Length: 374
Image (cartoon, rainbow, N blue to C red; front, side):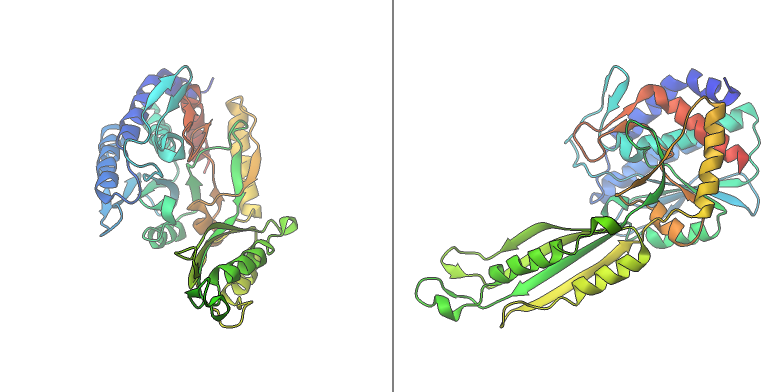
């Protein structure tokens, strides 16, 4: 067993205790005060374990972002993680059942940040040298699109030789993520003409009828052979059963594998035209996360991780996934990016969200080993 893994296994209970602290500091994205309180818990852990003080990046409406720097030098490794969750306060509680620990954001992705802290702490305590300084960027709004953090993520990535994203590994297999779909969100507002459904039905122009045509058009843009999916997730219209609907609204989710496909689909959606004479469309939105495409640099980084895994008696695989992360932004800049280096478990955004406790030290050791080789 490697010295790093042995050290981390000895500290498994301490790692889990840190996970419990940050999970109990609940942090739904929309609650700035709660996210900032969670950030304060993370700051205390970085100070306690690594002697680091945060560079706080203040935000007006979202939680503050946190930047920590370990080591010196011009070359740097960027570790990306987010502190916010999708869960309202009190919706889920922290609990342990056997080898599983449950709680809001425990898998997505507070445990990943804790593992990263302990990966560096293991190197520090064992005197294992890192050839590059390590920058941690802990953001507050990933779950809602990273609108306030994207510029900071991209600026830090441009200064980095490699980006390691401590989002959770693929469930069951523990695979690392070498490519991700890009993500877009669009809204379509439809206007028709209201009239009495009984007395003057023929004078109305139904926005709901137009909405039905647009749903079929939008859903029809899905092309599984290209990895392109369009989902009209929310459709609403009208306000009375006896009134021809004057307005309707669609919320549209887009996922794509290639940047060129993002441009094509965006054009098709934003340039959509009405089917019914007399209706109008107002369309807003864009592809806000570019696809994370697998490159030769990604492949090289993954193979390096597999070598580290072999030394830890782990057989690593890679996967392409449909969800986006902040790694999409860094990969799109051409910076070598490896994702899925966080906790193992299952159920992100689900009530059964959990981690596998015995994998906390193993995945932390993998990250530590990888950093020593970079």
